[in-house]
Image (cartoon, rainbow, N blue to C red; front, top):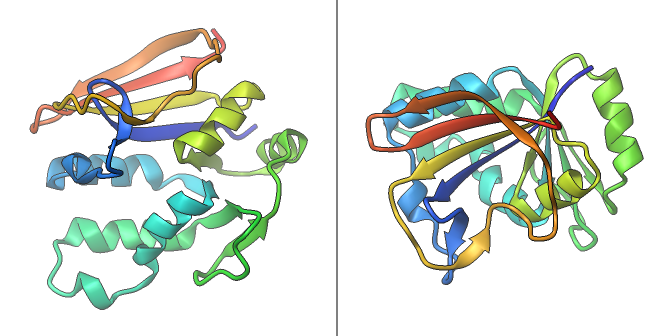
Length: 186
């Protein structure tokens, strides 16, 4: 059975964006980006909420990547190769290949997807991840803790959810980013 993985770049106080919606402090350097590429390479399907999709759909276009380092085009190729499901009640059309819209998040449908997928899945965005966590669907949580405290904003993890975790991997990356990989439900 495929795993559902929630990965998030966060501040040390576990926010994915500050109170103004900024997340520029989490922009990965080459080492972090290359590490993320390797983690994302085996993902077959990404589950996104509309806001996360709106942020990431830039990877569909080559226009802005002219002269970019190789790890940027590598990530674009990885992202384009994966299927994408966008959960949105308001999005009328998509602008990326291998993408479909679902109007509602149905835990049983995601369970079936996990059971039938040959490759792991990822859930992107804290609101959609919260739904998946509440439904007991998340198998792993990957956190990239950035060396900054932002004091508030959009929390990476939901309130009111209790999930026992086992730390299975940790790594310090050159910019002071700490990578933590947890297995859920242990």
